[in-house]
Image (cartoon, rainbow, N blue to C red):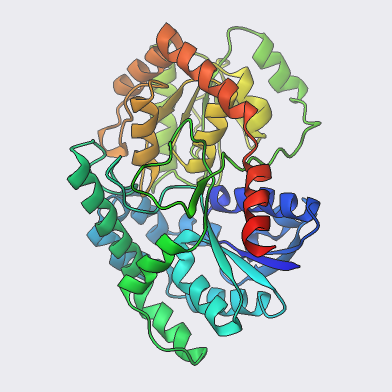
Length: 418
């Protein structure tokens, strides 16, 4: 059986899909991952068949418009509609057409939930079954506020559920003009927001996070399967460079600080603030530059600069993880069993920061607009010295390491697709 997985976004969106693809290949499926062309090397080095989608996601996020979105528009659902449309307008139709081409010989489609409207259209045009995969909750629930909703406080079931309905509508409006134009090209009738929502609720959903972090809400349908995280354990033979090894052994475990593609329009300013906070907290640090190009000239022998490193092998060696709250980095920190300090920028990142705080696995998140060196220093101190936080982080790490999200997801795919 041939399955195409359609995914786009940041590395945190693509990486779990690679893990799922490898699991399905091991179960005997022929799998193709359709993802943005800038991920070609990353996908292919894991032995997964790759179909490139036109459009460079890293370039979009690194542009001035992308950085402005990370700083401002992404925190306001209404403003995000226009901002997202402007960001994706040059590439979204080409991406959808390339995803369609990648499915021409497929027997089934697995689609990231946020792109469900495009995935539904492709599956309908080709008359193949479809299921969704999500690294962050999509369906409304009374149990917690919707990811990307500005108020990440549990103000009651009604507020939580309504926030979920509003955010689904926002996601729909991001893509509305493009989706129905794409459907016209496929000679399909236009679809509505209600149909988009019904499909998300009725079609099988692989929720790629731990039930220890998000238990199955009672008001979600049984079609939602919370499998556990999809970890991609690459570089299993990785060893720190001699310089990094010497730094790790030169004192207490350092604090990791990295924001992936998120560094705003002034990454140097953010880097200097981080270094100031490390000095105020009297902690050593590892600073990961990442996509966002976060660098600083104000370095000391208590800070090690790193271009990249596998989270699964680095994070168990650090005292705490300071990050943007992306789903993938959050998962890696949790599995390592170390406390997290979340400095969210946009979209689902405040949600994961609030989740970390609610579970007692780190201090309260600090939104970028409220970030100061003193506040970050205080949060770092709490993360590395609070016995309760460290104990709970260690415990949930053991639980997550005992799960096998990919294996459970493969069994669910076999149940639905055969």
